[in-house]
Image (tube, rainbow, N blue to C red; front, side, top):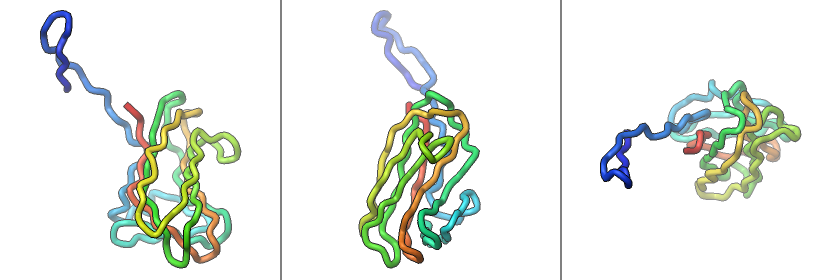
Length: 155
């Protein structure tokens, strides 16, 4: 509950604040890799992050069957850095019903040797139920480190 002062009447009104709905929320501080699907990559838990190692070119780490509401504004954010054997790498965060032209969000970021918070990236859902993925095109056996991933409704 929030309190707002009624300008015309000089009184306090109690109203409900809008609630934030998290579609994806994984701080990666524990091993929740089972919530994710791995395609051509290997994800391993390490203390407070996941290490994503590419096993085949152009693969991804994703979740499907997520409940977005068409027309709703969302924001996404995550922390990322270089992993083993890599310099700066381009990683794509995609949200959409399909990842071949039907994305609500397609955001490329470049990793560095330090943890960097990427986002929040704002987007409007084009479909009700969609998926999200991190797409990679690393050399085989190179990796990136990922933590604090969330996608939530914007209020």
